[in-house]
Structure formats: structure tokens, C-alpha cells
Image 1 (spheres, rainbow, N blue to C red):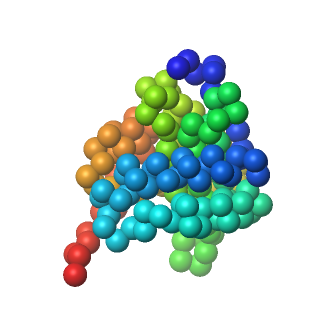
Image 2: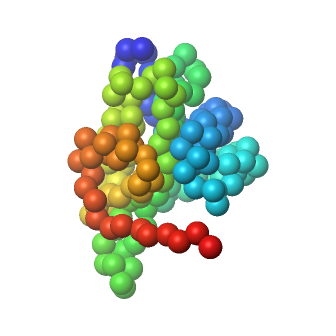
Length: 158
């Protein structure tokens, strides 16, 4: 697929069902296999309500990547801060998914670029993303997009 065939824009209400599907694919491909505590049915159970609310929330960003009016990827992000503890605004890239047949065409990079523009417009001083330590492809992708390791989360499953 060429980059011109896919448009990236802020999600609209009519995109929510496609974003639910996209999020379900993300949970099935990435989250579920890597995190046994994750509810892989969350997108189907709660996604429509959560994504509709995100569209209305100025502190949230929901992007849709569309090819012939079909959602082929999405990105969700949020703003936090400033606060007394951390007196700067921070943007968090919460989720990013591109269908396999649209990968390698810089669609993920286009979504990240739109997120970073939004974050700067919101006054963020930095942006962050969390990737599973076992997801080497995601880590390489985010490093190509200039994200660098900042912290390490260690978990002990009980």
C-alpha cells in the first residue's frame, strides 16, 4: 500500500466501530500474549464507550488511519500535568496499531508524527510510550521515532 492511499486524521464518531476492531487486533497480537493479566476482551466490552469519550476529551487524542473509509490503524494519546511533583506537561502515547498489510509504509510514523505535533500544541515538554520488553519490533520502531529508554518496570507475577 502506498502512503497516499491512507489518510490520518482525528477520529470521528463514525470511526469508533473500526477503532474497536483495530484495538481488538492490538490486544490479541501484542497485549494478550505478553501480559496474562490483561483483559483481551476490553476493546469489545468497553472500547466503544471509551473511544467515544476520548473524542470529546480535549486532554485526549484519538487518531484514525483510514483506507477507503476503513480503519486500518489507530493511535490514542493523553496529556497529564503539570503538577506539584512534576511541573511540566507530559504526553503519553497509550496505544498504536497498524494492520500488518499497511506496515512498512511509514503509517506508524505518520501516526506518531501527528501525536507529537498534538503534544507540542498541548504544551507537553516530553512524550512517552510504554512497550512490552518482549516486543522487540515495537521497541525498535519507537527508537526509530526518537524515543529513548527512560525507566524500567520490573514485575513479579504472584
